[in-house]
Length: 306
Length: 250
Image (cartoon, rainbow over all chains, first blue to last red; front, side, top):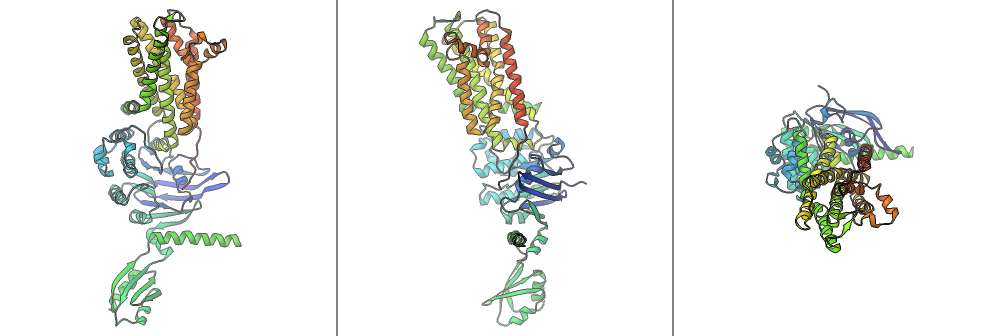
């Protein structure tokens, strides 16, 4: 089976600026990939090339085995762009019917509204909905054709906390069966973390990290076990635990930094140390993101000095 | 075909629900018609035709110019610059469908405008014509309106929302005045009479004036209209397929 998305040595230049610089990656069918990066990293440029909205200066893109502009690709593609003004004077149900008419096997309209959590708004004029409601409507439209590939550029922009949670829940249930591939960008890293199998980290138009969440987090560190040490627990006992990188004490509160928090916890239990209130962190994507993008800056700075 | 009809219907509804449609297609032409006919009196004559008939054609054409230019240009500009067109390019909808449904929707809107104008002419100002003449004048004006819709689409491709709105308004007034729709060219200096020969507004109205005045319709009227339509469609097609780059800002 061919890759759902394949990006091969893609470069996009605007004059002298390399917005995207020799990027290559493949997305296997059924996976959920988060494309992350600081502002100006080239995410939107890359997405617009994957969608066929702009042509790479060099390299090429295939989606679902086709060129992005091929009808065969677009029939199986669902998209949310970052900034879209919906057409004026059109009702929600009309927009849904309109989008459904583009595709050979559309999902039922009620199902779409329900998935997007906007069942009650079918008769309303689309542009008069709140920003978050419009965004959810755009999600309903993106999945109208029962797509096997979804590309969502900042899908939760404009949504409040509650809508965001509902949105991720329905997105998760939509892609859960493994038949669909999802590529998304978002500024909310904890949300990317809650849904993605894989993260591609973009910076300055280049891929600076690409891997599973666990791999990315391992690269960046910030994994630890914290606990409250009881009166019988000594400092030595803690420092002799396996895989300990550093221990920080603040009163009875102990934080053990390690690459293998599971093994540390297991050892604490097996050795029956006098400790309680365990907290285990496998590292947050946000920390990994900051660490990796900053690491990259330092490398670049050094390069400049040399 | 079902998809085409659905989009056509939505395009018609979008326009009819818009205040702009009411103002430019109904209010302006009907208002000016009633005002100027009463100003000069029903018995006035222009180019051998009753003023109330002559000016009915002027304002009917003025109405379809407004429908084609104002609604279309702004809408196309918004769709093009605010993501909608890009989004549509990622769907299987064909570009031809987008253009043809807009043109076909404007035919319906123009027909509605003309119907209202003709009803006002017949019922309020007691304009009398044979059924054949009403029909011929109506049909040519409705289909001639395609030229102005094409012009609206082109203007929508030239700039953003604000620019399109301003440009459409300027062109709207210029072609209406230069085409002799507000002041008949017969009473204007020769320069304007020559200029009018090149205006699609004058040429379209002239077809109906010829029908009413029972003179042969000049073939050049059709030729000029056809040339405008072909030219505008070609330029629009060229402008709309020019590669446009999406520059990343985020």
